[in-house]
Length: 204
Image (cartoon, rainbow, N blue to C red; front, side, top):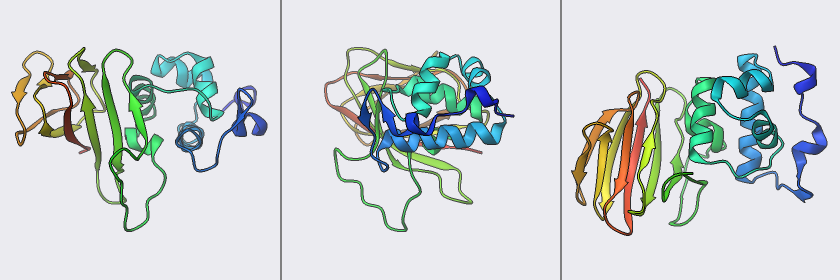
């Protein structure tokens, strides 16, 4: 069960570093989702932080609606909680949802010029999440294995990239499609400036 000393202060949930977080902001959705999923899992802050390999102070800040979480941090937390990545970052959607270019919750990688924009979360009775990926050739986005059974599908839109299992990635050109096991180490390395792709994460 969640331990009382790890409970989130209601004031802290609204305010971070003296800056009020808007209720509809991406950070507010992440904070609410983390508290909800941690409660469902019956984990304390310390237990979840240890399980995900994330500093307890970082997790506490995220649950309070603050911080600037990276892709790696949120993936680690989603795996530790056994939920889809997008479940932590996207609010419930209306029937019709339009995401204009440049909009939507975006998360950067720590060790690569790689930006993931959540386009669509997994709806009830379906098991997939949809992302728009933009990347530059400075460094590769190397991903640790996700939850067992995850399959990733990538369609390259612009540029060129090496995509797929870390030990055997495939060079993609615009219009090329690849699928590969997401529960094994995998990589996305842009080979040209302005590389973009659509990624579907399928949960089986």
